[in-house]
Image (cartoon, rainbow, N blue to C red):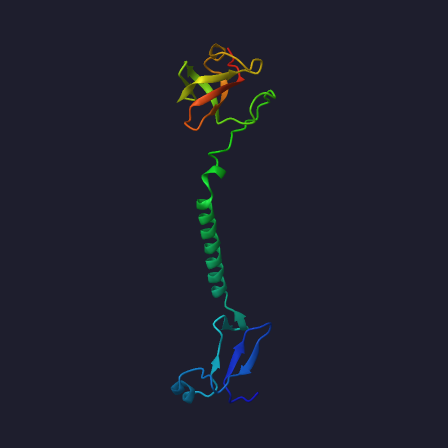
Amino acid sequence: MRADLPVRLTMGTGYALQPVCAAQPLRPESEQRQNKNIIHWNASYERSSWGMKPNTTDRHHRIKQIVAGIALALIIAGICIPAGVCAGERKIRGEWILPENYPDGFDGYGYINRIAADEVVIDEALHRVSPAIIYATPNNIMAKMGDFTEGDLVGYLTNSEQVIVSLWLIEKARR
């Protein structure tokens, strides 16, 4: 390679200097006239005391852009998931050992604070009760409201209007 030709560092597996075509000026003509041995360095490499080394700031910037894009995609995917797939449709499953005739999961559970014919307070939250509510205990699938007392741990199922349609005794209050 002639020393008076401008050269360009090319990207690839190694570092190679290639002559630049005369049709592709590296700098404006006024700068080319001042210095015939201009070297055009690729922006992804920089000079150091040890020779040429990769410019890591460009890579870090590119990685940050990729991570930001992935995060944005995950946020959009989270917003687009239908509500039925989320926790609103799932039943709560405790770690209790329940009889086979009990449901696989409940819409809610807690300790009874107060119970009446048309409402029940569970964990200090008032719930409406359906007139056709089903009460169930481990021994009796057709129990009565009188089988439930304050302090009992219960699970319940609700309808689409969030009215309790069945109340299931999980653990009797200790007295």
